[in-house]
Amino acid sequence: MRRLWLALGLIVMLAGPAAAQDEEITRPCRRGDLIGLWRVIRFGFATGATVDRADPAYQPYQRYVFNSNATMGYAASEAPPTPDDNRALLLTPAPVTWAIDAGGRLMRQTAGATRVDRSDCRVVTRVVRGPRSRVPGLPGDVLLTDRGEDERPITRRLLRKLQAGE
Image 1 (cartoon, rainbow, N blue to C red):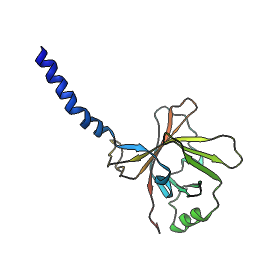
Image 2 (cartoon, rainbow, N blue to C red):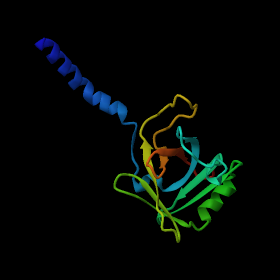
Image 3 (cartoon, rainbow, N blue to C red):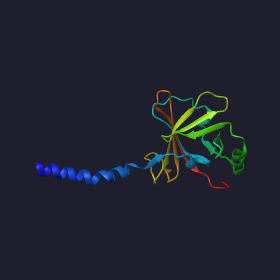
Image 4 (cartoon, rainbow, N blue to C red):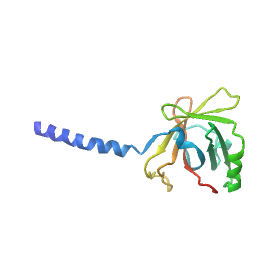
């Protein structure tokens, strides 16, 4: 019996670090991770979440721009944005300020508002293939999870940085 426990202990010791590495497919966001123009490549509602699907924030084509001066812009549309639309988003004065807290959460506040919106913000560290999507998460992509007042997830967005001219 003692040999069995020693063998099990050895297996757990050897498997422990490998298992931990397998679970580390994301890490908390840092400020420098977000600066730039992003497109939402995957978007979904959490199971059981109550949302107004007619809200413009849930349109299929979404863009975020995080500026180095801690301002950000956001646009959502029914039609795919053109490179000119992306340039306009980059050049439009951004009415929202943003920051990353110590835990890696994205905090956003619209000018004049008292409410601070928070999203879990994670950077993908290796290729991830979801069972219900053909679009894999790639290293450097950002996963934003919005939560309700009860702290349960409402929406998840997978963002991918756009290259110049896209």
